[in-house]
Image (cartoon, rainbow over all chains, first blue to last red):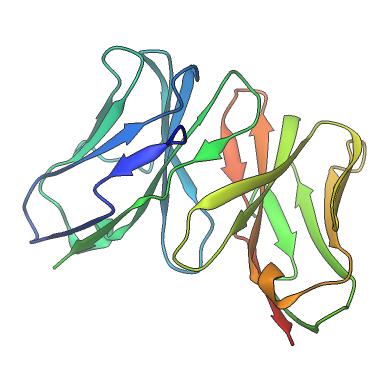
Length: 112
Length: 108
């Protein structure tokens, strides 16, 4: 499968726990984006990377959120001390420069 | 006011009808994407536009840069076209801003 893959597909956690999601972009894509989507809403920008550099981080993200792309390939998104309001679909997308975007299937997070 | 506005928010139509979904934006952009999201599914990019018009099968996308407006048209709509259609713009800072989506339901 040469598309964007995300792991896990679903995550259920208790409030206060830490969670980490992984995104593997298409191999030659230098840009990687993280978005969050709640039911009935369009995706909201969280952060994006060009290669290993994190170029922008949304004001929506509190200090509990951190993202890395250490070697310019896969990326991880960590949420510390999860809250119920963090429950959402977390989407990853990649592109080569400003060309067509390819999305992963997302990780559905439920915080109990 | 959102930087990307879509209309309508919800649309129900009969099979075979011609469908138009509109997107207006208020920021300078370098490109505009039309995306399709099926229930429980991932997002698929339908078109990326920076000017003019693109066609793929029964789907047509147009953009008017001066008016900051784009439309997605579906000809001869079919129940399998039922999905959420999302407009997203790439602004001058290379950030992608999404509309809230248009939920389309085509009745057989």
